[in-house]
Image (cartoon, rainbow, N blue to C red; front, side, top):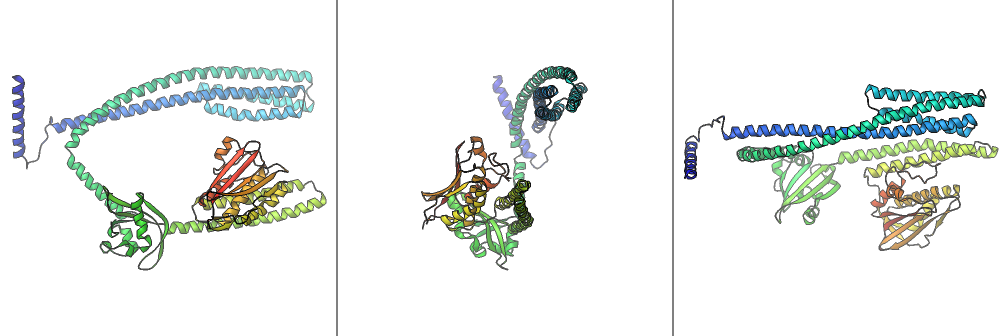
Length: 593
């Protein structure tokens, strides 16, 4: 009975509240301190503060855990560095003692090489050492001991080399060096023990911080759940704010469309303009109201009705680049990148959206850049070629006089030729990397193109005593490609093959036709490629270790070859075996007559 009476009282209370709300409908509502809004707002503030506190705490603990882990890793790295440092000290000591016993250039060179490694190792150890005074003093003392040892051995070795030290004095100097080395060893052991303790304490701290961070994240989840529940109640009471926000978002979207630096056109299913932003109006020199209802084919026929409707058929945005569009009033030509896609409601087509971005200035700048690069190339190549001619004249003179400078002049000439090749490759890289269209497709007869490529490489092959073998005997094989690009591809691959081939070996060029593709292979008898080299050989700025040391490389040759083949709708394949050689295979679409 008590429960039933309580329910009746609650119903009567709500009914009275509804009557009061109806009578006060046109009066402003005054929230009491214990109203639902006040309670929810206070709960929201408290939950939000808890979430902020938990988030800051979680971030702090996570940061501390990460810092502790990094510090532990730094300590471990310091341990490894100290071990390497002591090994270098021992190596320097061994070579110095050997020299003091039996002075010889080999021991002296090894000692100098070892001492050169001391400074970077010590510098790395100091960088990894903590900044507190005690540990810094240990590092400084270790550095002083190493400097003392180095000065001691330098002095002893110099005196021994001049004959100022006899065998007994050399033994005494070696013993003193052993004593300093023992001090270095003791200091390294002391620092390593400290670092091991430090690694253990930092690992424990990292584990503790990580556990604390986990606990805080759990608390954060609870606070977020409470916050979510409060938000559910509050959202129901603020629908009007959401609606106002939506209207504001629509207004902002409209302003963005009106002020966007791209042209936006909304078309109906018949390709009539429903709306267009001011950029389109400015380009067409028409008012926005004058555009509505007009056909896009009438105003911008270059867009093409078929091209726009293809976006609806494919379901994906249709993109076109550098489309030439004339301004209807002045016939002034502009270049646009266009994107169009269909707007559907369910399965029914409602219209199209068309975006136009004016790229006239960009393409003009790109062409100016290309012209500038060509000018720079000419200005670079002219003095290099002049130097090359001068060196050839000097080489002839050196040969006639049987001068010893001939070998040095030959190396300088080869270096200049390498620079010329690298300048050419860098210019080609810039041109292809910028996406400038430089290819002109035509029917290319393969036999004369390959012969021209081999003629370019022949002097280099003769210089390295490598035979170029052309097995492309069949005439009539042709591809759909750019002839200059094909010549460049084959000559570049042959050049690389000659550079890595041993003397009196062969570089062979073959061709075959299969499945509407022509395959041109360039095979060498060089060292071949490992699996690791094979994975990165076509990347930009990757230099193979197998090329002769006397030849420079920009690391762009094979990357450019791969990019050019891709632009020719083909592919560049690699077959290689370590110790037996490699074959680079160019697959291009055949010319189906």
